[in-house]
Image 1 (cartoon, rainbow, N blue to C red):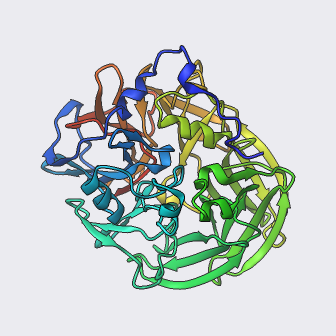
Image 2 (cartoon, one colour; image 1 turned 135 degrees about the horizontal axis):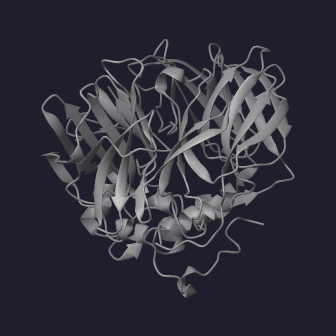
Length: 484
């Protein structure tokens, strides 16, 4: 059965609209480079750099809603922290699709969860809009706004002016996809990324770049069907992919009869495929199939003393998470989609799963580790997490936490009801190598305002050390980065 054949009717629910819905009730307003007030505490003297965040800023046009949260036009927040204080700017990525739709004040293109408007014969051949709304990659001379289905867009790192679509020096010629989850090796600065090129049997395109974004090596790995692959893991000398049993039926998509989201089949009998890649040669070294699960995001990976790959992942038992995320765009959710923290051990030579264990039963997402520990063991994973009494069917995350996957120790920053933090990001202190900071953008549903909160990473359950006010609401988004 497809994931969209049994959608609940969210229009008949008598539950009050949640406070988080106020953040997406209207298209977000841009603001130019603006001094940001310190609402409490002070900016740490060793915290100097820029926080970037990406996410859907507009979920309707011409009074027509998008089909899925993933369809919203991407908007980037930049918060610059200098000796002179904090400044911020928030701007939409000026993609060709956004510019064309803005001129007509109506949707013109299809997306992840919507088909193009018009009669069937009018839809054929019309491209899917690059929403540029999922993540960012900070390169020395530009910022890349990342999206799953095509090229990234380059922006000015200071002003966020859109510079245009970026094919990384023709390495992505033909609009090859470049995923929203690149992995940066902390020792070499090399950037590893991928993109899935759809087809009857799709291809996993692999890219290894230097720290400037210049692609040094490429490879193409065949996949069975067209699975949904959103993230990967850098684990020491390996890249690891888990292709869940969600497969896209491309024929109705190609004919513009159904959008991607509605053409995905959950096939648990197929199982999840594990693919292990040598990071230097980009060649397959191990491949196997195992139990079915779905994941959006991995936390981290490394090779243990016995030579096995240890991999941490947020796992879902099925694909209901896609329906929950579709409902988010409506302002009301009622689908249960619980992801929890699992640890896997994998034999790299065969790709065979050696063991699997749920380490944190609490519903959580958006795992992040310290950038200097990517691909290595770590004692801290920073997460978005539900409060213990949260109604998972109707709430988005109201807390962030630090989780030790070795000891299972959890420290939570509970922001209270009606306050919604984004993915927590780690920033190293410029003066003290033993000090780090956690930054998150918080929407307060009571005051209908957005703020940047800065926590001491060693005291996440204490009050934030600083709160910065933002000029307008920044809606909940997906991913970001800290550029020191």
